[in-house]
Length: 199
Image (cartoon, rainbow, N blue to C red; front, side):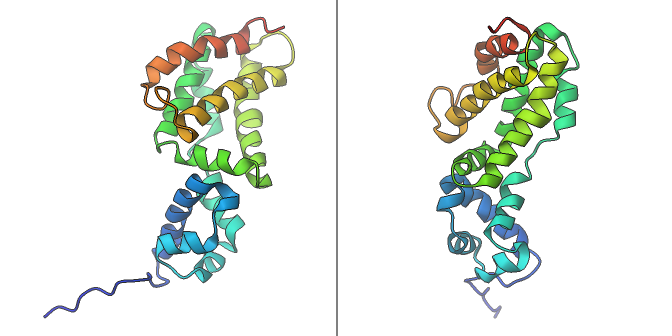
């Protein structure tokens, strides 16, 4: 007779680290940085809470691994959105934003946004990623008059707001609309922010 598998906490083996990252992603998405606890994350992963310190040095390290290592390569995104007709750059920006975050159900975006108010690392990560690494270079490429940083902030305000509605608040029909429907609705505004008259 085969011995039944032991239930309960997972031993501190090779899969413990990945189990903690997956559980942390879920808990941070649901509760943000402040609301998430090491104990809750460890419980969901089925491991001893001490493993968080062992593998990540604490909650901050786990947050950085689970949330701040985003599925984005800024150089690749910039090359993609600047690699076509300037008159359709707004469409490419909105489409790439939605494809990127839809690919993981919006979980990492939601975790990042829910954590911004209570965690400086999340705020810095959000600003650095969207403004410095992506939107400012794209506005510089677009070549509109005035301050590229102001235009980059306008783009960020629209797309981060879109992300909050789609992935955090999950307002319908925006949460369930197909990508091309949203692109058609939002891209003209992004295009104006990038190339049009704004003052």
